[in-house]
Image (cartoon, rainbow, N blue to C red; front, side, top):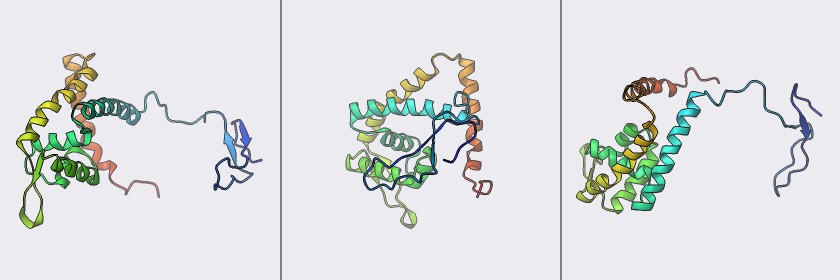
Length: 185
C-alpha cells in the first residue's frame, strides 16, 4: 500500500458505483486533514464568496417567491435601469456575469415584456426596459437594498465607507485575475 507521510490512510476497495472502475489498489484515502492547507477562516476569496452567496441566496429566494424571477433577471433589469440601451455583452461586463447567463435572463425578460430589444448599429441589439420593466425594477429594488442593509447593519457609517473603498480597490485588481500569463502551466 502506498503511504502518504503523516496521514492516516486506508486502501480503497471496489467501486460501489455500477459502471465505475474500482480505484487502483495502490491508491489510498486520506482520513485526516492535510497539514499544509489554506486557513479557511481568513482566506479572503472564501469569505467574500460566503457573503456573496448568502446575499444571492436570500435575494433569489425572495425574487422567485414574489415575482417568479431570479437574481440574474434582477441584475439585467438593474443594469438596464442604469444603462438603457446596453447590449447583452455590455450588461455581462457591467454586472460581471457570463454572457450566456445574461442571454438566458434577457430572453426571459423579453418574454415577460419587461425589456425590449431594438435594432442597433452593425447588428447590435440594444435593450431597454419597458414601462412594466421599470415598475418591476421599483418592486424588486427594495429586496436587494434590504440585503445590503442587513449585511452592513453592524458596521458604523465610517466602516461602511471604508469597506466600500476597499472593495472598489479590490475590484480594480480583478483584471489581473483574467490574465493567464502568470498562471502555472
